Image (cartoon, rainbow, N blue to C red; front, top):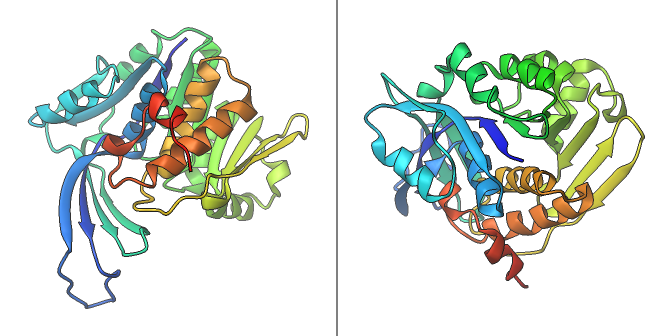
Length: 290
């Protein structure tokens, strides 16, 4: 089995600050660093480090050869990563003294996906494979509908949140993943309760509290708690969780086992600064103790 991910690729610029700036305030950063990120890439790297075979479908600026090289060092297959004219997507990430973050995105090549290329890439998948999607690229609904025809599992992260995007994808989604804020926004937009969202399975991540899975077909609910840690950088914690859940399911785990594994991986991630480069491997997660 394998995981195909139509996802963003970003160059992340991290600025550590004493506090988040107020309107009109100028702050000097405590530190600055550059790394690999994007919600899509974070999830691909997490799934690959967890032990799954991962094919990333996406686009980067043709001058950023180091980005492709860095991705491949994490075990992600880049045969479906296109080089395009223009810039690779990038993010400006502010981190305050309590490890909270603020993020500004420039999508760049992430919203220049080609429909024929995306379909051709997914056509290599088997019905037992998984398609991951997020809201940082174009053509998510196009990809989801094609994957559903092939019989694939479609896991969709509704972030950055867009009610319009979620409505478009819901008919083709196997598992909808949101955080608590996004879940509340979607319920308000659709005028429904969580139980009434028309998706077979839902995961709601709850930060340091853990996560909840619900089958809207049977009503079964599973909750997992998060390992308590002192956070250094919460960026990509949710992506680490989702990537590990996807990998766990791809490797044949039950959903509860996959979620517990993913929660431990996400907890270890937040003890490290960075995004994709800081996501732990399966061996590191296995050895992680508090």
